[in-house]
Amino acid sequence: MATKAQKKTTAPVKITESSGNVFAGLGLPNPEQELMKARLTLAIYRIVQERALTQAQAAAVLGIRQPHVSLLMRNRAGSFSVGRLMEFLTALGQDVPINIRTAQTEHGEMSVLIG
Image 1 (cartoon, one colour):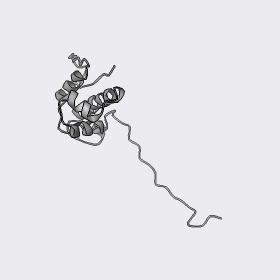
Image 2: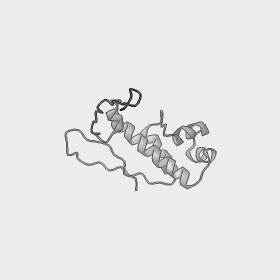
Image 3: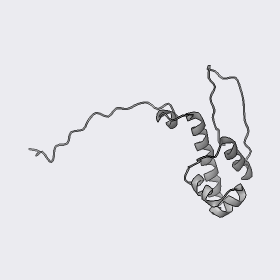
Image 4: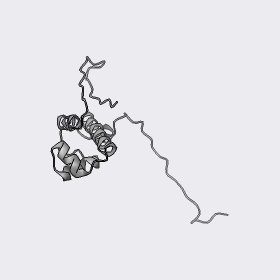
């Protein structure tokens, strides 16, 4: 027979299906922009890692101070705009095409395709 210490009761877990955007799920303002910034920052991180750049070397390439590179490497885009993050990618030798087309819904969306 189980004692009180051995019995565990668990509350039911509520599961909510994701919209695909964690920032929207958290109720943050401008969730599409935040998701785009996160994806661009991830692309910058991967390139810096692939090239084995130090943060000081990456700072020189990007034209920013090393502490800002440190923030980027921890996926903290902070006050960097989407445009500035795209400039960092071009400084790293990446093409950043922008494709504008008519939306399928009343409100368009932003997306980043990395490839």
